[in-house]
Image 1 (cartoon, helix red, strand yellow):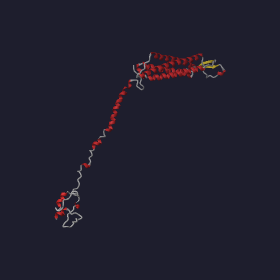
Image 2 (cartoon, one colour):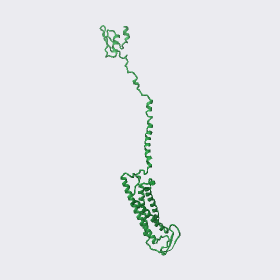
Image 3 (tube, one colour):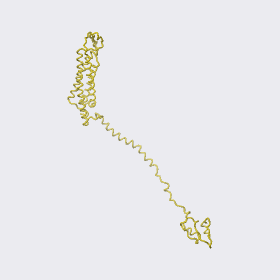
Image 4 (cartoon, helix red, strand yellow):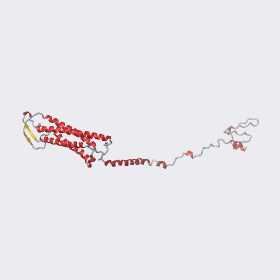
Length: 294
């Protein structure tokens, strides 16, 4: 048997059969009274037994018949039992209250039946204070049938309390044992859905990698940039500003003392005295070529 089905004991099956039989009796009694005079409470006595048959048929057929077990759900059985529990309470309470309203004895005559299915019998009231023809009147048979409907309806209500309580307790115990997960599928038709989930997960990385592929292409198209300063030779200062002291020693006469390397400019060279006179150097030093001509 499938794990999602709550197996009921034999006594629960017997209670279900009793619910159907008692509701069938209530339906017959309500229809008998409604044929003579229709009351709203009798309408409940007719409709509720039909709902009872549908609920009991679903609970038994989906549990016992193998081909229909896919439609079984334990929460559906609990909800339906709870609904029938409430509706049967309303039915027998309403019928009992209406039965208690017939407490004034009266005498009728000239009763006739027009042949209708519902509300077919009419009688004339003999008392002058009750000349209205729209007042419902029940004989002793009708009063006894309404009392039976109220009593049997209360018994069916108690039977639905029993099935509802047992199903709820068994469901909670099964939940503790790991059975009947809420929201889980009750048949094997959900297996392809579980297999399709990894397929969707495999497609997601493919979509995420597509915009990443063209990113390294711009870096491959351009060559690596080089600084233009690395290709130039190192900076060399001009040689004409401070010639080495050896060149000045060759161009000037030997009478001049050697030039000191600490003085960069040739204008600062000092010359000795000639014939007791102080030599005044010119303002601008002549070029080295003139010294060669002398």
